[in-house]
Amino acid sequence: MPSPPATAGVNRARWAATAAFFTNGALLGALIPHYPGAKAAFGLDSGAFGLLVITLALGAAAAGSTPAPLLRRCGSRRVVLLGSLLVAALALIAGLVIDVAAAARADGDMGVTGSAWPGAVWLFAACLFVAGAADAAVDTAQNAQGLRVQSLLGRPVLTSMHAGWSLGAAAGAGLGALSIALGLPVAVHLGLNGLACAVILALAVGRFVPDDVGPHPTSDSASPSGTPAADASAFPTTGLRAAGAPLLLVSVIAMGGFAVEEFGNSWTSLYLQSERGLDAALAGLGAATLLLAQFAGRVGGDAVLHALGRRRTLTASLAVVVVGLVLALGAPATPLVSAGLALAGVGCAVVVPTAYALGDEIPGLPRQTGLAVVSWLMRLASIGLSPLVGLLAVGLPLTAALAAFPALAALGLVCSLLIERPARPRTGAPTPAAR
Image (spheres, rainbow, N blue to C red):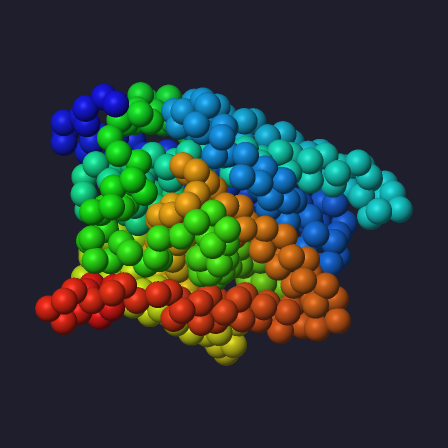
């Protein structure tokens, strides 16, 4: 095994990985403000729209745990770069489909599906499906790179890397809202966004730490994933079969945090337009508000994890998520709704990256398998979540249907309380995770 690179090289790799997270967020975040336009262009009701937006998650679920062997075979550099370029190309095609369908609908020649181009919705869904599968591979690869850098540095840094994703998603959503206000075609925005992300990635991936440098996080018993040693033993040594229960527990925690992102990505713009009366441009800023708050929480998240330990941080964070989502859905005034979105964003900041690190540390699994499985199960949950909300919205007000999101966050909160407390040292002093 090659010797670990110098600290300066690892720090450069840290910022390169952060740039990869940024582009991943920007590529997907750019789609958010255009979902209501797609719904109108394709002539969909709320139930059909709920089925449409899960095709991204369906693609990720179809990938299953294959990102792990793909990563072991091709390496994180190739997977991140080529996977991201594929996502960018598919987003551009999806934008073209929206533009053509909207133009055809404006001509007034409707088919039986409510669209002048009945095949448009299927082509759009196919783009989302393949993009979801590619994104699953990119997500696993960039998190594996982040965990390797974290292990080499010996301190928590993964959450701050995820801050790059939040900033990128907020930038993509914000610029998407601006493009709508300016009346730009969807394809122009998504094409320019994809080109910018490709340039950033081409400059960044060369700085990645090679995948065969340094210990794999789970092989370093002293400090897996760069967390304090006493905080790293969240699970006892286990075999392959016994790993199922910890994987399920961690995956539900991840789902509780990911529910906020699903709410922001798929439903915030529609909710703010249909239930709060905002125009399309302002509604698009709702998701940007949530994601910018998530970015702020992730900037300081590593310090909070180091101070409080993962168990207490996860519990407090998911409690804030529940409060924020309830406020966003139930507040009587728009400023309070925005405050709720911000709270939910801050609360979910550390949840997913911490769950990824916990999953990667579960003993008894092949390298990167725990990380890939947690990511897969987390995305799998969103397959049922958005259609459930869409079906509920057919017979209930949209606000009531969206209560499924804080309910899932509350379930994640319960699971965070079940993470095993690490054994205390013989001196009786509490460990960071037990505090």
